[in-house]
Length: 289
Length: 256
Image 1 (tube, rainbow over the protein chains, first blue to last red):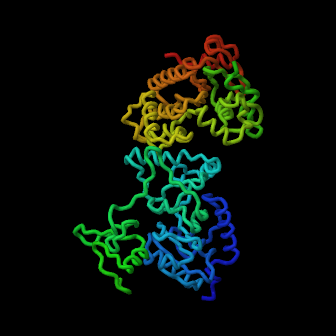
Image 2 (cartoon, chains in turn yellow, brown):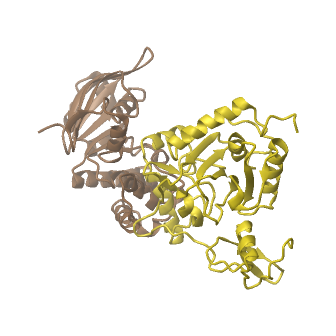
């Protein structure tokens, strides 16, 4: 589609976004304001992630998009198609083959390497937002490292539920400095945030970009007597038998029947291809749904 | 003895209009100072200047810090001043909802200051919150209720507990009994007097209610049009007012 510049955005815009990304990488966890553009999709569909991806893509990249871990949901398919059309880059569903992965609400199960970039779609970048509505005040709290309020939220969780009930978008402290919202990933994924790949976070409506360089020290906030615990459903995957992956619960009939399956579809597929079979799984066949 | 707070020649103007001017006084540890005056006399402006919410145009507010002795709070860096505001200082607002987080439970409200200074043990924070709710006469089973579910008097007591939990040395109060009915006022004053004496707090209380200063304050400052027109011991000023305005103020109190 030659009517578009490579990867949809014009070069000046990409340059502006790259500057924000570099600043974000230089100050891990700091929210860098940027002049977010309107994208041909609604806010909440990943406009921030798409802009960051567009600024990072080059013609040699292999691009992968996941939504809640899956490659075949609406959000993932439409964004993948968008870049197939506007950038003509190669796309893949295999985590290991992708050089740039845009994700919504999950980190892939397979460990990422130093030559990969993970781009997150972020709805609300400000971890303090629901406690402190004023942006002026939250910026001041970040600059002065006043993060007591974040623990008030966790305190409220324990007093109401007996345990820290925050299960996603679990706040983290980056390199002992900035408190950051890791986007709505399940807290099961929090321990992976110190990974080898570069992680970039884009919030389109809120006009913020932040980043984690490789091997950043990321600590999930907790109390001494209520330590952080990554949680997942207490099952194995019913298709591939994996016991170490984050699971989706799927209702399969009207009689209360259910199964637990890996939320990371590529991880599940690759395990089944390698011969693993779960409690309700059939042996893997190439091309079968 | 070093004064806890030395106020020197504070002035604040709103454009050409005077907020307050030429205010100087010393406050010693354990002393309660009352500031009275009619609406628009500059008492709230003065309190905001002293408490660091409003930068005055002139003057010094020197506080005897625990670590470094007397220091001018106006020339302190902002992190230092904010640290002071959540440890050694407390501010009780007239409207409890200005000083409370209405969406957070009573225990969370009291615990916030503890967590802000680094408490990270849930059990300890909760124990202290329950202890402080008891001290301000709020039943322990209300610890998980939100302030919305509290009466006006309870909200005000909760605000006081939230402020005193870190053991401050100086409390600023802006009309702490405003908007409460008289029997609730009486109980709140009783409670405040007890806490001030027990903890050896120093306090600056701004009010237009002479009964409040009569009960709580050791010393009194009367303000009119942004200036201090009379000051002295509370009983002395109220029983033998010298300035015409103070005489008017004292004689205006309704007798039942």
